[in-house]
Image (cartoon, rainbow, N blue to C red):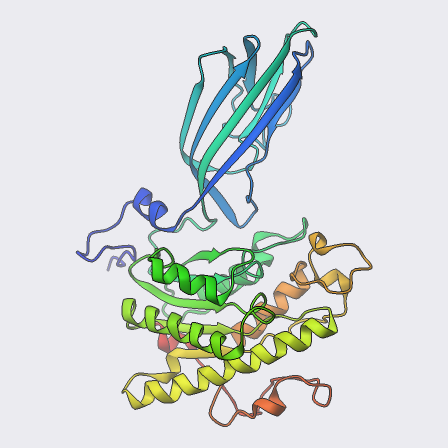
Length: 393
């Protein structure tokens, strides 16, 4: 029996890949410039597409190249190392003043250096200026568009993510969760991950996107959605506002996806003591509103098990600098934020896939990590282990 494709519109028509990209892709605009003497030797101009990392693919690239001063002979790619370029075949052309060149690449870009070019054969005298403007969409690096189940992941830079250079795609916590779902589904269903996380985003900014209709651009049959906001909230809004924002997300998702499973992820560890104390208050606030929503759902005849809250406060050692992203600062930084190495991401994924959820018996004052109870929120302290596959049938 053929498996039903997931991505369909309200009329049950299967969406094309381009339609999915238009719904899910984040639009970016990037510019690179060269200003100097036209060199006689080969010189690289341009650079990498911004916001590109191993968790993303760039698609629908459009570039405009312009030159001022003199005609310039340009080449794409590299004859010695084509792995960073797309297309890998070297192409040489002339770029002339007053005649911009437009390049459209509707396919997938495997590396970030699409807008890097080589110039040469100049006279080492003529002044030239080259402008390269790129427009493209970034989508999650998971192209299984015919998967039966789609995983949504909303959040800030903890999920975007900022990573260390040695981290592989399968090391990242959200990709590890996807792989776990694929490997353990008793019915061998297929899953695709779509990450809609943006660095700096808060629960409030996400609500504004919901209100504008621009945060719900996901496949119609979204099956499970992870909510990972809080790291940027604790010093910007009150806990009551935070709870209201969570409720808004739940309302939106339930209205658009009645059978969805919603998973709330408490904030990951902060290195700084003051910041950790601040996010701790918001972890508890998230748990409180989840427990309230569970009771409300049950009273309305809805399945409260479709609301799952998972604490990530003790997923890795927050005082170990190597657990955080290199980009957070030097070795002597006092408040690193982003889980950056494999160990930290593995710890997050393990806690998520264990499936321990808050219940009405959870003592929020004890089961969350404190100085007196550093073990944090662990079974059997009022938690219940969920079989998520029973909810995803």
